[in-house]
Amino acid sequence: MRLHYLQHVPFEGPANIARWAQEQGHSLVGCQVYQSQEFPALDDLDGLVIMGGPMNVDEGDLYPWLAPEKAFIESVIAAGKPILGICLGAQLLARVLGARVYPGSEKEIGWFPIQPTPAAMELPLCQGWRETFPVFHWHGDTFDLPRGAIHLARSAVCPHQAFLWGDRVLGLQFHLESTPETVKTLIHHCQDELIPAAHIQQPREMLGSEINFVENWHLLQALLGQFFN
Image 1 (cartoon, rainbow, N blue to C red):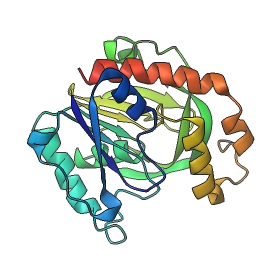
Image 2 (image 1 turned 180 degrees about the vertical axis):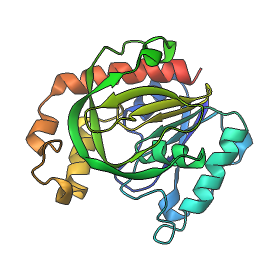
Image 3 (image 1 turned 135 degrees about the horizontal axis):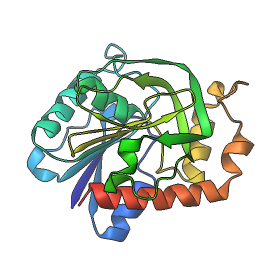
Image 4 (image 1 turned 60 degrees about the vertical axis):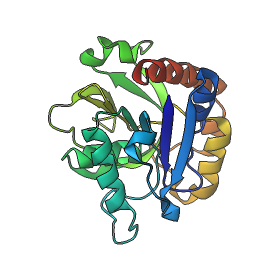
């Protein structure tokens, strides 16, 4: 497959998504939208991944590339191409599909469990998901579910952690793609957010659980293999 990703800041790239694409023999090309790079032609991609970022989806006055990015995402949805949105990417998908995006009740940063919905547990897409399992978070905003979307997961402080719209649009508020290196980079660039709070872990906690990184990598492999096929 010819996969393309949209990157919003230098320190949030595809991480283990790139590893998976290479292992599966897929091509993966990026567009750094913060550098005002042109979006690819629809005929040049088979699937799209939208990465995260610290901005809000409606801050078009600060980030003028947001409006054309939303228009591009809308065109990819209309073309029936599979789209995976992660964190900000999921929020952008929700916004383009007509849902509200807004600050959550509190920030969620670090390893915290999510709970799949009964609907998720019936989908081949979510194979390997348990009744509850830890994933890596770094977000303050959240979204309402787009009309017609299947609700896939929730957490203690974020009711909408994942959704599937149709069978081609998947939004994940969390980061299955994270590696120790990418988490270190996030900590470096966003350390001002690491204030004492119930759902904000400190660097030692975030980096001290090797098994979480390994398990999330296996979950990512299974999910991507089902979604981009």
